[in-house]
Amino acid sequence: MAETTLHDWLETPLGNYVLGQEQLVLDEAVCNVFGFNALQVFLPEFDALRANRIPNKITVSREGPALLRADLTALPLATQSIDLAVLPHALEFSPNPHALLREVDRVMMPEGRLIITGFNPRSLWGMRQFFSGGDQRYPWCGRFIALSRLKDWLALLGFEVNAGRFWAYAPPFATERWLRRCRFMELAGDRWWGVGGGVYLLQAIKRVQGVRLITPCWNRSPQEKVLATAVRSAAIRRSGYQNGKVIPLIPGSRPPEGEAS
Image: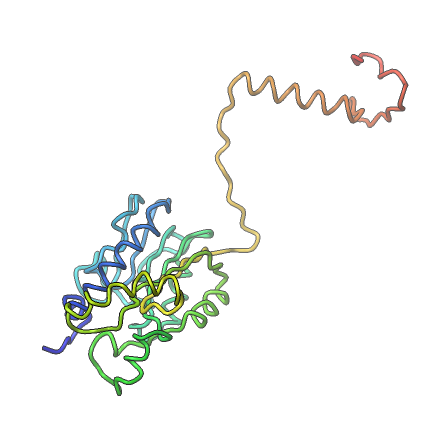
């Protein structure tokens, strides 16, 4: 039976093959990202934020069991409210990936983390799509985005790419039997053909010029205050700064009156 939706394709052996590895890769990518609000855009059947510990998790999609159903190019979220955004295959199945990426940029906090997964057009999967002759079945009906192009889009929005990963090196066979036979290609591909995986993950940080994170000013203990005062006093003596005036210290001369030698 033909896969009429992406959800149908994910239930096939090939879809399970991709999704099983993608879940492990995303678990590793999101587990140490902290904040208050995390966002998953698209693919609500797949829990991309499963391993993350951010308290407020929001899933937005056009359809399916999402927390919010909305136009992905007009997210019903406040500007600069999201600390972590994950887009599992959202861009390649969006009618306007540029607008979607700009909207995600709008809702993200400065220094927020953005994680994107997508199918790699420069792989065996990309060759399968190229020779499919306009196949309208999933995932071949999507518009696979080259990694270099995606990096350019992110750079224009001010994102700094800081990590990446490839997987699914086996040819996109439809049967589980042939996929099992090609399992050896995962280790071989990761070692010998690192950029040839059928699926990639890209992680980036939203950089905003002139923005500096302010860390909490923790209360210091009395001992630390005493040490800080002693350090400042020693610095004053070394520089010759006293009563708001700079007093030049001549080698061999006596310190100003009232100062210990």
